[in-house]
Length: 476
Ligand code: NAD
View 1 (cartoon, helix red, strand yellow):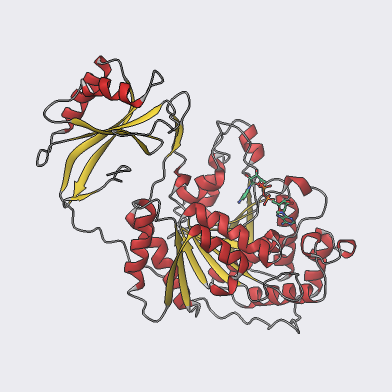
View 2 (view 1 turned 90 degrees about the vertical axis):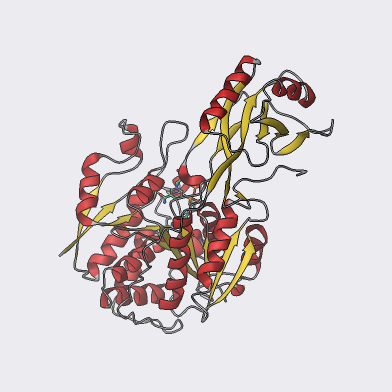
């Protein structure tokens, strides 16, 4: 019998996991459930990752995890276990299908039928954050070409295998031209290989607004990590409840299945939780494991339960008539073997595996150092005074070209009205055709230190095949 690691999680986690396991067992799924301990208890026992070494061993053995939501303790020192699991196990694709269950689950969007494919390992979720000055904090947004290619190809292959007609991409590449720009560029490149599938690109803000208003415009949507996280909650909520949607976190060798919602501490232990999101994740898991009869029975029983008006409070029209988690579970169990009459019954076939080609590293481009951005902490005066100090470090290899404060050019020709923090980006450029070695940057830093400036970080400016690999400052 296939062994599945199971984590009961925190908050409403244990209630909804008990519910789902009861339904799976009553549906006689050929699985052995191996419990692992993760989450709040583990954090509070002093394991800052939230997962103990024994649990890793079970995961390595089972390679599939059904996971209830966990609570990340507030405050510093604790890492998000969800992010750790996704990255450590290489779960690069987070697939979140959401469908309206009109008219049995109230929604203003009966036509909603969307699959969010969220990149799961990169972006601002790298968790690389620093306090750099008295006033300024930074979070690094990392986007890689292999990361983009993998998730975009997965989205197109998912669409093809599941008979979906269109793949939309959403980014903010009008502002983040390098990072989001790469995601969009890779989307356009990969799309060329799928002429049978329609495509479009939306700026994330208007894309989210249109999704909340007219979800029928969308089919499969592929997004970088943070936007995907936000958009999938929006989609689940407008479909009826954030408690309805499940997700599959897919990697090459591991898979993790979880509801999209959190541990809902506000309703924990009250018997109010909707187990549907986790149940939908479990159905995705059974299909991924190659089972068809059991997920078909469970899905039809669940649909019949909903159309018979058995709802937990979050999706009920009349909260007075809402069922508890346990009553809802029993309602599903009693309907195992039945088919819905209003909803179209499902008959799952063998899932076609989604294969994406191995990443092929592109030809190495010629990389040349053409300058350096030196970030300094300084709270002594205005940009002109800072420029005078910086220029004492000018030499034949590097000379001051520009100063910005929070990305706004303040020298040369800044505005007196611009509010400045104590965090300054000082751009030094090399003369045309001169490409100094890295030690020249170290020499520049030493000269700046001698001038009494505190350098908090540098970013080398490179061209790649003569194309600048950095954002140009405002006014350039
Ligand atoms: P949440 O999703 O837990 O709750 C948001 C709202 O939705 C609450 O009002 C809650 O009662 C309701 N809700 C959520 N799931 C429900 C369900 N199944 N049935 C009925 N109502 C439901 O989001 P939050 O309050 O922002 O986060 C709470 C905790 O969950 C935090 O510690 C957060 O870090 C964690 N979290 C964990 C995961 C995960 O483990 N995958 C995901 C998101 C948040």
